[in-house]
Length: 517
Image (cartoon, rainbow, N blue to C red):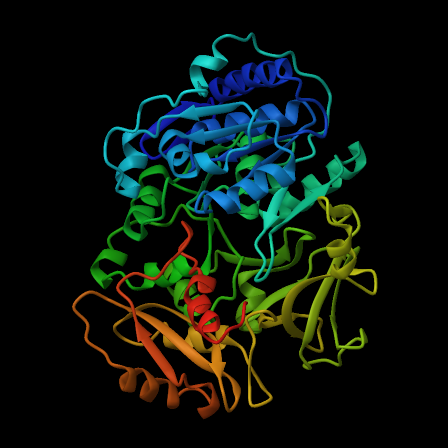
């Protein structure tokens, strides 16, 4: 059967997308785009996202997916810093960011379809092609498909979001043929498809509900599309719709993040039990710490099909853990995936921490991690720790070499000299009856330097106050971890994946204290 891609209710045969990508490659080539150049994409999940990505790769050019939540100034920085030679964008997003578009760079627009409009509450309209831009499909129709050639695409140059300063573009050279084979095998293991390599992937239905501007969904899309699997990309995550799609399309491989697990578990019991999920063979999650309580409940519901990985945009995946391993060691993110992947935990002096002693997590995979921060050698050098790459996480290795994460070093709260990791508190608080989601972070405190603050989003119809939250936590975590400040919000700022924009919550507190974060 011919593989297909489904986005919302639109289904397009994969060969049609490939043909349009070949036309786009001809078009990009006519603009003078060559090897090592950059095409930027500022879109929600949509078919042109795939077409432009494949087209850039055919020319040996990078694609830079840009977080479309960015302000005009933030977007302009990425467009200009990456040196983008073309930009592909939704028409309504063009209107929000047009002041951030570099002068003289060709811009190609696509009108968002009705499903994207519905998913994001967009009014109908915004379908006028802005002056000075070209409509994507009309532009493609002018060009013949570019003849394929043997070339290893360099992949995506993803910009990592830092807690301070501008984001950094992670750029690596196009792999050699040998490196490409090794990396493909690693990714196949990571995505539960190793047994299908060089075979027919036509019976795989791989689904991702997260935004393609993130590195893992981006890699998931590229791997399964390029290897002939069927692919479902949702415009936006919705918990019950996810269950509906798994049942309806017999999804076999699913990419998630822990926030999605939380929202799925908050569904009423009758809704959770309503759908047949028996087609699932492999569910991968990563990107953020997952509460062991949440993960165990998901395994009780979905069975032993939930796998986990840990790594970074800079290094790729470093560790991997099967459901069976995790049940033996709850909370672990696994061991090094391959013998030539190095994972260490270092103290401030750069020495290896003893087992079960937390420190900075650093790692390296020789076939993947030869990268630079585009245009910023100083930041690249700062990331090195004893020849490894530090990813900003704190954790420890147990006696068997399994890695456990404590949280982000940048998120760590230091209160009265004591280190507090928000992920631990969030993992407990999110299970409180009536709590839909939460974010925990540090805010200024005159006496202790920092104090713990929690923002809580309640489930509809629920009434809780700050004392309720503190009492619940006081029974489950150490007293110094109980937030001094508890705020409630009807809607926490979040990305498409559901991940909370903590920086937007923290900034006012630190700005009022005269400090930047």
